[in-house]
Length: 566
Image 1 (cartoon, one colour):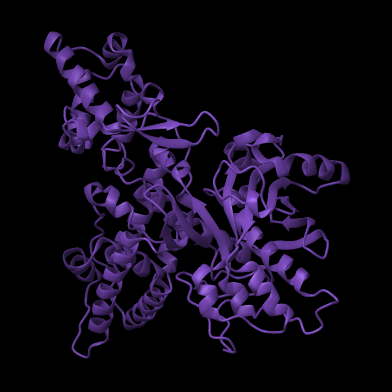
Image 2 (cartoon, one colour; image 1 turned 180 degrees about the vertical axis):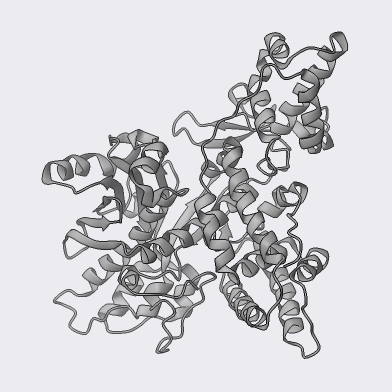
């Protein structure tokens, strides 16, 4: 093994690079499914009471090694004029909550009156998550009619959508009365990894969508009805629409961000130091081909994403041809990495990161248990102001790339809408709300703190941080952040989020890649559609060993004997 060399923060934390990321072995969906299989989770319905039209309720019973949960799902009629995927919606096809233990009749009655109301209802700390979802208008009804007629759908048509339902929100970690993360980590260790509870809700929503479909298919009036082909069932995921609500999280949780990026970068550095063996090289060719086919099947009308996908395929094909040529010699993974850095697009470079991580599960998988961290931003009041200024110069040198006297650098502000308490973007001197904006301008705040530090040190060189904050208390938050994050290698996204041309899409994709989503389809610079758990094993597959190869899912060939997750 050669020397382990981490990518520098200036590279790994670049906003545009973060916005070019893909799912990997460390993504939360992959981790959850591996543990469901390895730890032999038992998932079944304790109740499944739907009428002929699929309306009613169902309760999943989830037995894990260390605890038991239930997912309670309510299905109701939704008029076309009331269908809305935005957060302002007030009615949905499905609403659900993940709760502790078994659900008796009295509790079910209470949940039935509150969960369908979502934010307007009431849940308590027995609930881990609150969520909702809508049917896909493009595919659900047409697929229902085909299966009732005994006809399997065209996989290419399914590939255009990839899901029966899409979720528009999954709330957890104390929101709207749900239990907080500390309780989950203490009492439900099977879910003590980032967003495991939320990912479980999405996984079971996907399973319910298939079971509800088959319930509606197999009604007495349809004697020719058939189940959806098993490979197609696995191919369907759960849709997701993600907007600005997700973007501030990465800024507001810098230590967690540092942990996610750090574990991935450590795994990647260790992989690059491994000797190149023929088995891994052969595997790389296969996963590259699979990833290319996956990208070909991405359906998007967004010109920016389409251009990126086209360039990615051009680069990947060149790499594939080179790897397959008779005279190629790959002797060092780091040489391959450096070649990609010099010749390929950011998306191709980050795709290669994910693909190389696939080759070494023994290196990568153990790091999934290092992704959670207790967050606390603190400073030492006895530290000298000079040391604090030095930390800024060393760890935050990138903030001085921005000139905040320029109007363009200050034109965007982030705020919460009063109606839905969801993040929004405003434009300075155009929109109201700048006086209550969120604290996301890290670069500007660090610069301002540094300027005031220098001014004070000119007056008294031996001043302490405590004395500085007594005179400049407005800097307390950023001093806490600087003092803490200066001890880490990653964590601060290197961008000015106040610039007039800031692209929130990069933040969304970064977080979604860690979730493990696929098929990014931007609908604007502010929100994106994507697919979750596409290609993952269904619940029945969890009882058996399976190949953890459902990254970059591709449309199956009907009638093929290959069942990748069986």
